[in-house]
Image (cartoon, rainbow, N blue to C red):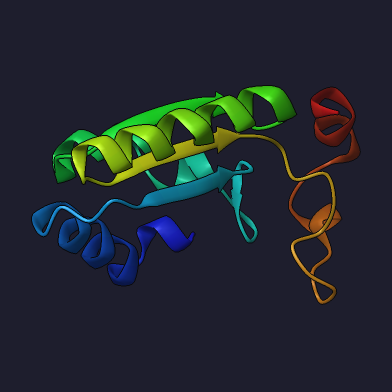
Length: 117
């Protein structure tokens, strides 16, 4: 959900325009609160937006600690060497509720959670 806000787009555009060495880390857990990502956007995830902002992008298995560490290390080195932003999209699955006031069983069934975990 946050990647669909004007703040996200403004930050990405601004960081690229002024060539800020920073990392945008998006944990894509398949939901924007209760909205599945296929109802949130039509494109191929979040990292596919990176070229539109003029920045590099990395997609990584967010469940693999070592892969995430390697991706962040690579992104950090690239950002510092080129003085430009990098976007990382860590693909994962939200196993629990979004917050204490959320009941995710209202919008996804137990079988979906079982298959994803």
